[in-house]
Image 1: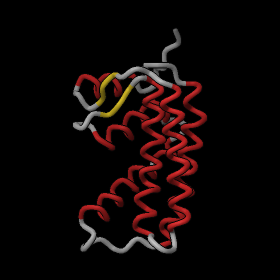
Image 2: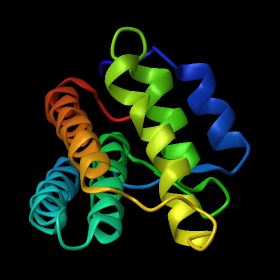
Image 3: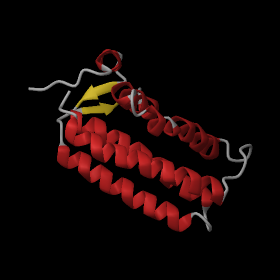
Length: 155
């Protein structure tokens, strides 16, 4: 069976540290997550003008689901200990290089979403322009996941 070796040391460390866990590898479940990602992006686009904060949260969730789909296809899942940061670290380790420029906006979006979610009274308001700019980055990330999944065997 083929092995995906790029990022193996990072994945092994995340597994041994309890941030990632093994689950049954499932292409079907991964593809279902990608469908949810696309649905969230469509909803985010529709809400951009009327509810930019909600739209941003949906866009971020779409990105998170796309990254989680890559891992699900491999039989990996972030634990509550690892969370969203682990999803990003695990996929980035395996796909950068060469795809870091597509993946890196996720980490910035995660920080922005947390700022809005947990410190909304202190955070600058999310603007429709910010949502529109990041939705296109999320769409690129989903496309990356759609292309990567068929080529990445179970871990």
